[in-house]
Image 1 (cartoon, helix red, strand yellow):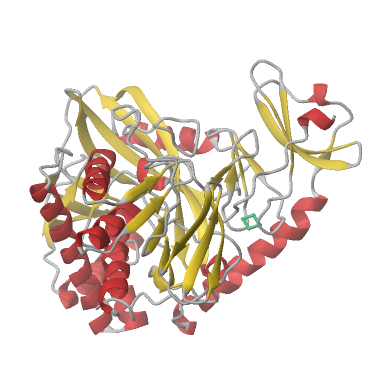
Image 2 (cartoon, helix red, strand yellow):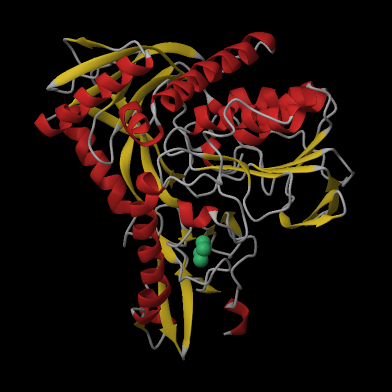
Length: 506
Ligand code: FES
């Protein structure tokens, strides 16, 4: 099974390939769902179960994006804490959000029971812990938020991960699973119910023709009544790119000399925070820990992020070996809550789901529930809370202004800051760099064998200059998070066109 980077996540090692894709048909269906991650697969199954014939279209393979790189924490609390949601959206909205989290846990448990899914699901307590006084002030606010929305949370004496803490609180009944084992069976059930799944099929544009939606794909046109972008961020040019900022997070699965792998989920309160859980794969226990998040395309050397994570973990754990390391992308919404529903500026009946922060498994499932309800019944309990058209100026304005400034900087300043080289021989093996070469600005990666892979450096979305990601061997765009492999092929939307490969022209 492939992922959107060269590093292998712990989940991929167990599931190599799904292998049941139907790849040569482009029929008319009631709903087209774009993207086979947790949002798309769950939504497709929910619709098919209701008798609404759907086709799931995936540009690569199941779990290629963040669903294959998540750490799959299933929480009833979120990166945007309830106290903040109460402040920005009101208590009733925060309670509705808490209710949504509980509903998602029930949906996932019901799927696991109904379809007998062996996905290592386990209910575990979650622990939030403060490591200094300022973190503790926020923890106090979090406790109050949990109290107001009715989420059980209580103080305990010990941090199960052994990290010395100022205060530790436990939130019972959190959970975890193996995301790809879970999704593989949901996808199989969708196909069993008559749903169609097209792999290696990229949707390049969407238009309205009369009452129909016409999706142009690399395998022909598909006509439908509804279309759902379950692509993490909707592709093309739309307002969602001004309301979401792309980030990357770094993860390691490590063996510990202590042999102590607590059955718990844990989170400190740094900004960005570190997150912890354990998992047993093939009889081997691992501590899976992550953090060191940064804006996509915004650091000079992504391998440094792994080094920082390793060194931080080394302060608290006696690490015997590092079995896996990988990074993954997520989107931070401007006002703290995801955007789920009709995509503004698009034809009616075109939907998006984005801005999940670090809570993709819960929000992906909640998005599937929300959108499938809107399509099947005309409404959803969550449609107003998550509406992509909502305007929350006080909650999101500062973030929107900051992100807009960052995009402008990347559009203008990055192009002026490119270093000049006179010969490709100036690049070392296994080095990637944006360079000025004979008057052109190029994205050049010289591989370990000394072969240069040369691309145009302007992102095909809105022409920002891409930046090299050494850890994942990809070209990442700092403006809206598009990513490309060393041949220029798209790894992540919103871009839908590859970077022009000009190796052969030089
Ligand atoms: Fe928008 Fe690159 S992702 S310009």
